[in-house]
Amino acid sequence: MSRSTRALGARSVAASAALLVLAAGLAGCGSSSTSAPAGTTGATAAKSPAVATGPVTLVNGWVRSKDAMATTATGMAGDMSMTGVFGMLTNTTDKEITVTGGSSPVAGMVEVHETVKNAAGVMVMQPKAGGFVIPAKGTFELKPGGNHIMLMKMSGMPKIGTSVQLTLTTSAGPATLTIPVRNFAGGDENYVPAGGATTSMSGMTHS
Amino acid sequence: MSTGSDRAAAGPGRRTVLLSGLGGIGVLAGAAGLGGCTSSSGTAGASGASAGAGAGSAADTLRDASGHATARAFRGERQAGIIEPPQTYAVFLAVDLPTGADADSVRRLLTIWTDDAEKLMSGQGTLADLEPELAAVPAGITVTIGVGRRVPELTGAAVPSWLAPLPAYKIDKLQERWSGGDLFVQVCANSPTTVAHAVRRMLTNMGSLGRVRWQQRGFREPFEGPGIPMRNLFGQVDGTVQPDVTGSESAMLWIGSAGPAWLHGGSTVVVRRIAMDMEVWDRVDREARENAIGRHLGSGAPLTSPADAPPTAAADLDAKTPLGFHVIDDGSHLRRARGDNKEKILRRPYSYDDAPEVDPTTGRMSGLSNTGLIFVAYQADPMTQFAPMQARLAEKDLLNLWTTPIGSAVFAILPGAKDGEILGQALFG
Ligand code: HEM
Ligand SMILES: [Cu+2]
Image (cartoon, rainbow over all chains, first blue to last red; front, side, top):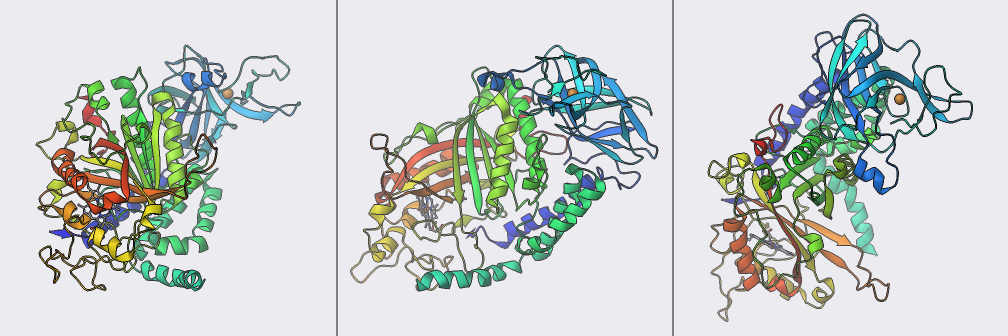
């Protein structure tokens, strides 16, 4: 038999779907907040898969890929040997944790970076002295233009839609993450190595 | 004039009528979306939580009570955006794969879009989204993804014979710019901002894995609900007669075990861009307009029912005038589209009303309108369901005097993604 799309059948399907999302949404969102109850297991399906077991997870984490095709079109190919990792570092333990660096199969060097304004008023990034401190059961945000993890000495950009392995060095031991790679146009601050605000790194840009 | 102010006055009242329906659910889902998720992408726990609470107050009353803030489930046997009552705003777009595309690049694109769709439908920004606030009102958003012939060809999956352009019809004036494509994305929501943001994020995240081939923006009646039907821009009540796709006729919509394995639980979509010639329509009197469709313009009821009958009233195809002609004209759209009523399609039409095109020789806009219907039809098999209907209409349909198909595309709609899967998982063997 024929009937209208607005028939009750279709509507109640939508309605129960909404209820499902409600439940999933609460669980997923709660896991990344500082007040997540003990025993909350990482992110739900609605969160990105950039989560692994260990003392630290990265909720909604992503690695920036410079899209060679897109950037050359505008003449901004940039430095293809380094890029940033972003997302919400989340401490799953009840003790403060410090992240000081890491290692990755795709990078010869991994550093924790902050972004600061230098004497000339230019935003530059540099190694973060003392590392990233994540409070017990707390979070620490990594974002373009702010704190981030730097993958350096890479042999090439990881492809978008793939994932990158990263093992963080933390005061609570290693934490291995699998982080999706995404296309991102911004985030080209200048790079200033440790203690070298005056060091000329012209031509070397951050991603 | 008076009609304008009448309409304005009627607005809030009508909206209130709509409010009662999904009220409770809307409020709950809205609260989860705004409070919970904003804090995850905001700066830190405390400040994020308070921002969520603020946004959850006055402004939400309207959205929530009308069900507009509702989030929808992404994971499941089937994709969303098909059997739900159509949301008010939509973007339909087709993407072409670049020359060097292969199974791996297609898989990476579907990996990205699966994650995007899941996040957007739960009211979160996508990865790499610096403006997740624009996703925080899910507004019932659905993201629905399909593929053209090139995708199973690249991945080595079985290619159904119907996954090809429709036969040519004599009424067609198809333009390349509105036709074909390697992948299909439908984004629908009750907020145009939500739609725009979702499309932008998905296309940005696509990077060089694809290129937009065409993009069509459509709308329906924002106040649609009891007593306020969807009307197309000819003023006709549109979308009334539909198969019972959640019940006895679900096999007309979903691909079952007879289809290729990668499409079990999937469907197909035909997207036809149909121009409506408003200037010629203007010359026609109301009687002739109603005769062309076989229905009363005001109520949408068949001409064999009283003018104030509901649009769902049964049409009497045998009724004759005193002069011996069918009351529902032999060339009327109702009669011609229905045929023997064996093949059926689920119609999900949206209007478009764009700025008139600029004439390249004069540099001026040509004509007064660039108006029509984005005719979106879902069915299990376009060749056995859609094509016979379209052939009949191309042969004879009074509406053809004013309507011209200018775009056409056919896609396979992927099955839903279950936990841990990407959309189109089964394409990759
Ligand atoms: C601009 C083009 C078109 C317009 C303005 C239009 C308008 C309408 C209207 C007003 C109705 C009656 C109300 C309803 O049941 O929704 C209708 C019915 C229908 N239309 Fe169209 N339509 C168009 C194109 C098409 C096309 C291309 C097809 C399929 C190839 C189609 C298939 C149908 C079907 C199957 C029905 C239901 C017929 C019945 O059993 O009563 N229409 N259309
Ligand atoms: Cu850096």
